[in-house]
Length: 259
Ligand SMILES: [Zn+2]
Image (cartoon, rainbow, N blue to C red):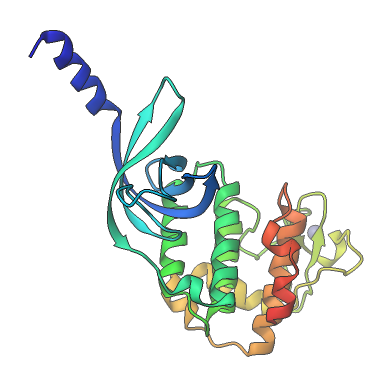
């Protein structure tokens, strides 16, 4: 072996990276390839090409919602990454078997994609732990808990103790309004949406206690189906006012047909 080729091998090895990640989006590219979007506590959001994924039996494949240790190769000449190998942790194969769980997971993915990567570890933990427990019976509660924690993580939901506009502590019986300029819930006096988007005291108490509690315990809080449906509607409407871009899965109107 010459010195030169040894250096080349070292360079090649340097470009292989390995980390835990989950496939949160999988798109076709041309006739043969796929582009996977990975969410990782190490890389944040990373797009990876799988050459031949759609045709070749030999290509390393990772279907949507596969959580694994991924080995990827960064190609600086092409400015892209390709998938080298995976060691699966969980494939979450049941997610795509029902409309409710498919919808919930795609909403979770879209929210994860908006995040700029500063909170990658927390987001990965949030995403994977709720995807692990998501099923046809608890999807509304999973989405409520995921969304409220997501909004808190990205700084759009405070602890629901005081108004972020006038800084006044909320009264127990306050019905919260919404500040469209800040994109956050606020006290009735600061409401700029003429009570179009309100949060009643009992619903606020549930969200506030959820944020104070571990995920697993908060999932056990009992609320009626009616309350779940209303809270999910409130939170998805909040997302449409709080986020810089509209969510594709909410535009479809599918949520209304599921409720
Ligand atoms: Zn206020």
